[in-house]
Length: 294
Image (cartoon, rainbow, N blue to C red):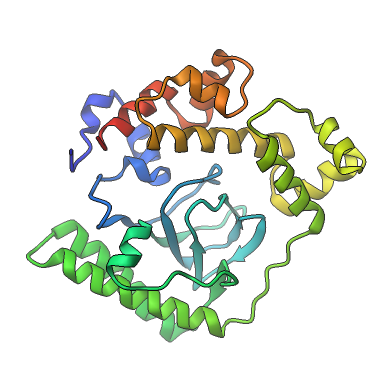
Protein backbone atom coordinates (compact mmCIF):
# COMPACT_ATOMS: atom_id res chain seq x y z
CA UNK A 1 0.00 0.00 0.00
CA UNK A 2 1.30 3.49 -0.84
CA UNK A 3 1.60 5.73 2.19
CA UNK A 4 2.12 8.96 0.29
CA UNK A 5 0.31 10.38 -2.72
CA UNK A 6 2.62 11.15 -5.64
CA UNK A 7 0.85 14.26 -6.89
CA UNK A 8 3.51 14.88 -9.56
CA UNK A 9 2.11 11.96 -11.58
CA UNK A 10 -1.36 13.54 -11.68
CA UNK A 11 -0.43 16.41 -14.02
CA UNK A 12 -2.02 19.04 -11.80
CA UNK A 13 -1.09 22.72 -11.70
CA UNK A 14 0.02 24.25 -8.41
CA UNK A 15 -3.31 26.06 -8.10
CA UNK A 16 -5.20 22.79 -8.66
CA UNK A 17 -3.12 21.04 -6.02
CA UNK A 18 -3.81 23.80 -3.50
CA UNK A 19 -7.53 23.69 -4.35
CA UNK A 20 -7.80 19.92 -3.94
CA UNK A 21 -5.71 19.76 -0.79
CA UNK A 22 -8.04 22.33 0.83
CA UNK A 23 -11.29 20.65 -0.18
CA UNK A 24 -10.76 16.92 -0.66
CA UNK A 25 -9.57 14.58 2.14
CA UNK A 26 -8.58 11.98 -0.44
CA UNK A 27 -5.82 14.29 -1.69
CA UNK A 28 -4.09 14.31 1.68
CA UNK A 29 -1.38 11.90 2.66
CA UNK A 30 -2.90 8.42 2.58
CA UNK A 31 -2.34 6.47 5.78
CA UNK A 32 -3.59 3.24 7.32
CA UNK A 33 -7.12 3.36 8.67
CA UNK A 34 -5.85 3.08 12.24
CA UNK A 35 -4.29 6.52 11.94
CA UNK A 36 -5.67 10.02 11.54
CA UNK A 37 -6.45 10.63 7.89
CA UNK A 38 -5.93 14.37 7.97
CA UNK A 39 -5.41 17.27 10.34
CA UNK A 40 -4.83 20.81 9.13
CA UNK A 41 -5.12 24.48 9.99
CA UNK A 42 -6.61 26.41 7.07
CA UNK A 43 -8.07 29.70 5.87
CA UNK A 44 -10.82 28.61 3.42
CA UNK A 45 -12.52 31.21 1.24
CA UNK A 46 -15.06 29.27 -0.81
CA UNK A 47 -18.25 27.33 -0.10
CA UNK A 48 -17.79 23.57 -0.12
CA UNK A 49 -19.68 21.12 -2.27
CA UNK A 50 -21.74 18.40 -0.62
CA UNK A 51 -19.57 15.91 1.23
CA UNK A 52 -20.45 12.28 1.89
CA UNK A 53 -17.81 9.87 3.23
CA UNK A 54 -16.95 7.23 5.82
CA UNK A 55 -14.88 9.47 8.09
CA UNK A 56 -15.65 11.69 11.05
CA UNK A 57 -14.93 15.41 10.76
CA UNK A 58 -14.31 17.85 13.59
CA UNK A 59 -13.87 21.56 12.88
CA UNK A 60 -12.81 24.30 15.28
CA UNK A 61 -13.55 27.84 14.13
CA UNK A 62 -11.06 30.34 15.50
CA UNK A 63 -12.33 33.10 13.23
CA UNK A 64 -15.13 33.73 10.73
CA UNK A 65 -18.82 33.04 10.27
CA UNK A 66 -21.00 30.88 8.07
CA UNK A 67 -23.52 28.06 7.98
CA UNK A 68 -22.92 24.31 7.98
CA UNK A 69 -25.74 22.16 6.62
CA UNK A 70 -25.41 18.72 8.20
CA UNK A 71 -27.92 15.93 7.71
CA UNK A 72 -30.66 18.43 6.90
CA UNK A 73 -29.85 20.63 9.91
CA UNK A 74 -28.84 24.27 9.52
CA UNK A 75 -25.96 24.97 11.92
CA UNK A 76 -24.82 28.58 12.13
CA UNK A 77 -21.18 28.88 13.19
CA UNK A 78 -18.89 31.69 14.29
CA UNK A 79 -15.81 32.25 16.43
CA UNK A 80 -15.04 29.44 18.94
CA UNK A 81 -17.58 27.07 17.43
CA UNK A 82 -17.05 23.31 17.25
CA UNK A 83 -18.62 21.39 14.35
CA UNK A 84 -19.06 17.58 14.41
CA UNK A 85 -19.89 15.61 11.27
CA UNK A 86 -20.51 11.89 11.63
CA UNK A 87 -19.74 9.23 8.98
CA UNK A 88 -22.04 9.30 5.94
CA UNK A 89 -23.76 12.52 6.99
CA UNK A 90 -24.48 14.76 4.03
CA UNK A 91 -22.86 18.11 4.68
CA UNK A 92 -21.58 21.34 3.13
CA UNK A 93 -20.49 24.79 4.30
CA UNK A 94 -21.38 28.26 3.05
CA UNK A 95 -19.26 31.08 4.56
CA UNK A 96 -20.75 34.47 5.31
CA UNK A 97 -19.99 37.02 2.61
CA UNK A 98 -16.76 38.97 3.18
CA UNK A 99 -15.83 36.95 6.26
CA UNK A 100 -12.28 35.75 6.95
CA UNK A 101 -12.22 32.16 8.20
CA UNK A 102 -9.50 30.49 10.22
CA UNK A 103 -10.15 26.99 11.45
CA UNK A 104 -8.71 23.64 12.42
CA UNK A 105 -10.02 20.58 10.58
CA UNK A 106 -9.69 16.96 11.58
CA UNK A 107 -10.67 13.82 9.63
CA UNK A 108 -10.42 10.35 11.13
CA UNK A 109 -11.88 6.89 10.64
CA UNK A 110 -14.56 5.18 12.75
CA UNK A 111 -11.97 2.47 13.39
CA UNK A 112 -9.87 5.00 15.27
CA UNK A 113 -12.75 5.46 17.70
CA UNK A 114 -12.50 1.78 18.58
CA UNK A 115 -8.72 1.89 18.87
CA UNK A 116 -8.77 4.74 21.37
CA UNK A 117 -11.68 3.10 23.23
CA UNK A 118 -14.02 6.00 22.78
CA UNK A 119 -17.79 5.64 22.48
CA UNK A 120 -19.55 7.15 19.50
CA UNK A 121 -21.15 10.56 19.72
CA UNK A 122 -24.74 10.24 21.04
CA UNK A 123 -27.53 10.27 18.46
CA UNK A 124 -28.86 13.63 19.65
CA UNK A 125 -25.43 15.25 19.94
CA UNK A 126 -25.43 18.84 18.55
CA UNK A 127 -23.86 19.33 15.12
CA UNK A 128 -22.28 22.57 16.35
CA UNK A 129 -21.88 24.56 19.54
CA UNK A 130 -19.80 27.41 20.94
CA UNK A 131 -17.17 27.12 23.69
CA UNK A 132 -15.81 29.81 26.01
CA UNK A 133 -12.40 31.47 25.66
CA UNK A 134 -10.57 29.15 28.08
CA UNK A 135 -11.99 26.04 26.40
CA UNK A 136 -11.16 27.46 22.96
CA UNK A 137 -7.50 27.94 23.96
CA UNK A 138 -7.23 24.28 25.01
CA UNK A 139 -8.94 23.01 21.84
CA UNK A 140 -6.74 25.15 19.59
CA UNK A 141 -3.63 23.88 21.37
CA UNK A 142 -4.67 20.25 20.82
CA UNK A 143 -5.38 20.86 17.13
CA UNK A 144 -1.99 22.50 16.59
CA UNK A 145 -0.24 19.84 18.65
CA UNK A 146 -1.83 17.11 16.49
CA UNK A 147 -0.74 19.00 13.39
CA UNK A 148 2.85 19.26 14.65
CA UNK A 149 3.07 15.58 15.61
CA UNK A 150 1.56 14.43 12.31
CA UNK A 151 3.98 16.59 10.33
CA UNK A 152 7.19 15.77 12.20
CA UNK A 153 6.48 12.10 13.00
CA UNK A 154 9.08 11.79 15.72
CA UNK A 155 9.37 8.64 17.82
CA UNK A 156 6.03 7.57 19.41
CA UNK A 157 4.17 10.21 17.38
CA UNK A 158 1.30 7.90 16.46
CA UNK A 159 0.67 6.88 20.07
CA UNK A 160 0.84 10.51 21.20
CA UNK A 161 -1.63 11.53 18.48
CA UNK A 162 -4.10 8.85 19.53
CA UNK A 163 -3.83 9.91 23.19
CA UNK A 164 -4.39 13.56 22.34
CA UNK A 165 -7.28 12.72 20.04
CA UNK A 166 -8.98 10.80 22.83
CA UNK A 167 -8.63 13.83 25.11
CA UNK A 168 -10.08 16.08 22.41
CA UNK A 169 -13.07 13.81 21.78
CA UNK A 170 -13.83 13.44 25.49
CA UNK A 171 -13.59 17.20 25.95
CA UNK A 172 -15.93 17.86 23.02
CA UNK A 173 -18.41 15.26 24.30
CA UNK A 174 -18.48 16.92 27.71
CA UNK A 175 -18.89 20.42 26.29
CA UNK A 176 -21.50 19.25 23.79
CA UNK A 177 -23.63 17.68 26.52
CA UNK A 178 -23.61 20.98 28.38
CA UNK A 179 -24.71 22.88 25.28
CA UNK A 180 -28.36 23.92 25.00
CA UNK A 181 -28.33 24.98 21.34
CA UNK A 182 -31.08 23.36 19.28
CA UNK A 183 -30.99 22.93 15.51
CA UNK A 184 -34.54 22.96 14.19
CA UNK A 185 -35.22 21.11 10.96
CA UNK A 186 -38.16 22.23 8.82
CA UNK A 187 -40.58 19.28 8.45
CA UNK A 188 -40.99 20.09 4.74
CA UNK A 189 -37.22 20.27 4.16
CA UNK A 190 -36.85 16.95 5.94
CA UNK A 191 -39.42 15.42 3.56
CA UNK A 192 -37.63 16.89 0.53
CA UNK A 193 -34.25 15.52 1.62
CA UNK A 194 -35.77 12.12 2.34
CA UNK A 195 -37.39 12.17 -1.12
CA UNK A 196 -34.07 13.06 -2.78
CA UNK A 197 -32.22 10.35 -0.85
CA UNK A 198 -34.76 7.78 -1.94
CA UNK A 199 -34.88 8.87 -5.60
CA UNK A 200 -31.64 10.64 -6.62
CA UNK A 201 -30.29 7.49 -8.31
CA UNK A 202 -33.26 7.65 -10.71
CA UNK A 203 -34.47 10.32 -13.11
CA UNK A 204 -37.18 12.60 -11.74
CA UNK A 205 -38.26 16.22 -12.12
CA UNK A 206 -38.85 18.82 -9.45
CA UNK A 207 -42.44 18.99 -10.67
CA UNK A 208 -42.86 15.28 -9.98
CA UNK A 209 -41.39 15.76 -6.49
CA UNK A 210 -43.85 18.59 -5.84
CA UNK A 211 -46.73 16.44 -7.05
CA UNK A 212 -45.64 13.46 -4.94
CA UNK A 213 -45.27 15.67 -1.85
CA UNK A 214 -48.57 17.41 -2.64
CA UNK A 215 -47.19 20.94 -2.53
CA UNK A 216 -46.78 23.72 -5.11
CA UNK A 217 -43.44 23.78 -6.90
CA UNK A 218 -42.87 27.45 -5.98
CA UNK A 219 -43.37 26.81 -2.24
CA UNK A 220 -41.22 23.68 -2.45
CA UNK A 221 -38.34 25.50 -4.15
CA UNK A 222 -38.53 28.62 -1.96
CA UNK A 223 -38.63 26.69 1.33
CA UNK A 224 -35.70 24.49 0.38
CA UNK A 225 -33.50 27.38 -0.80
CA UNK A 226 -34.33 29.43 2.29
CA UNK A 227 -33.46 26.58 4.67
CA UNK A 228 -30.61 24.85 2.84
CA UNK A 229 -28.78 27.66 1.03
CA UNK A 230 -28.94 25.81 -2.32
CA UNK A 231 -31.60 25.33 -4.94
CA UNK A 232 -33.04 21.83 -5.22
CA UNK A 233 -31.29 21.38 -8.57
CA UNK A 234 -27.92 22.42 -7.09
CA UNK A 235 -28.41 20.10 -4.13
CA UNK A 236 -29.46 17.18 -6.33
CA UNK A 237 -26.47 17.52 -8.67
CA UNK A 238 -24.03 17.88 -5.78
CA UNK A 239 -25.58 14.89 -4.01
CA UNK A 240 -25.14 12.75 -7.12
CA UNK A 241 -21.49 13.79 -7.52
CA UNK A 242 -20.83 13.19 -3.81
CA UNK A 243 -22.23 9.69 -4.20
CA UNK A 244 -20.10 9.15 -7.32
CA UNK A 245 -16.96 10.14 -5.39
CA UNK A 246 -17.96 7.80 -2.57
CA UNK A 247 -18.38 4.89 -4.99
CA UNK A 248 -15.06 5.59 -6.72
CA UNK A 249 -13.19 5.86 -3.42
CA UNK A 250 -14.63 2.60 -2.11
CA UNK A 251 -14.74 0.68 -5.42
CA UNK A 252 -11.69 2.07 -7.26
CA UNK A 253 -11.85 -0.47 -10.13
CA UNK A 254 -15.47 0.25 -11.06
CA UNK A 255 -16.21 1.47 -14.61
CA UNK A 256 -16.98 5.18 -14.80
CA UNK A 257 -19.98 4.59 -17.06
CA UNK A 258 -21.43 2.34 -14.35
CA UNK A 259 -20.86 5.02 -11.71
CA UNK A 260 -22.74 7.60 -13.77
CA UNK A 261 -25.71 5.28 -14.12
CA UNK A 262 -25.69 4.41 -10.42
CA UNK A 263 -25.99 8.04 -9.35
CA UNK A 264 -28.79 9.02 -11.73
CA UNK A 265 -27.18 10.55 -14.83
CA UNK A 266 -28.95 9.82 -18.10
CA UNK A 267 -25.73 9.64 -20.14
CA UNK A 268 -21.99 9.42 -19.49
CA UNK A 269 -21.01 12.69 -21.19
CA UNK A 270 -23.34 14.65 -18.88
CA UNK A 271 -21.94 12.83 -15.85
CA UNK A 272 -18.36 13.44 -16.99
CA UNK A 273 -18.96 17.17 -17.58
CA UNK A 274 -20.77 17.68 -14.27
CA UNK A 275 -18.16 15.74 -12.28
CA UNK A 276 -15.31 17.70 -13.85
CA UNK A 277 -17.06 21.03 -13.26
CA UNK A 278 -17.67 20.32 -9.57
CA UNK A 279 -14.55 18.36 -8.63
CA UNK A 280 -12.06 20.00 -10.97
CA UNK A 281 -11.02 16.82 -12.78
CA UNK A 282 -12.66 13.98 -14.65
CA UNK A 283 -14.03 10.86 -12.90
CA UNK A 284 -11.22 8.77 -14.43
CA UNK A 285 -8.58 11.16 -13.06
CA UNK A 286 -10.24 11.00 -9.66
CA UNK A 287 -10.17 7.21 -9.93
CA UNK A 288 -6.37 7.35 -10.21
CA UNK A 289 -6.29 9.02 -6.80
CA UNK A 290 -8.48 6.29 -5.31
CA UNK A 291 -6.18 3.60 -6.72
CA UNK A 292 -3.35 4.85 -4.51
CA UNK A 293 -5.23 3.28 -1.61
CA UNK A 294 -4.78 -0.15 -3.08
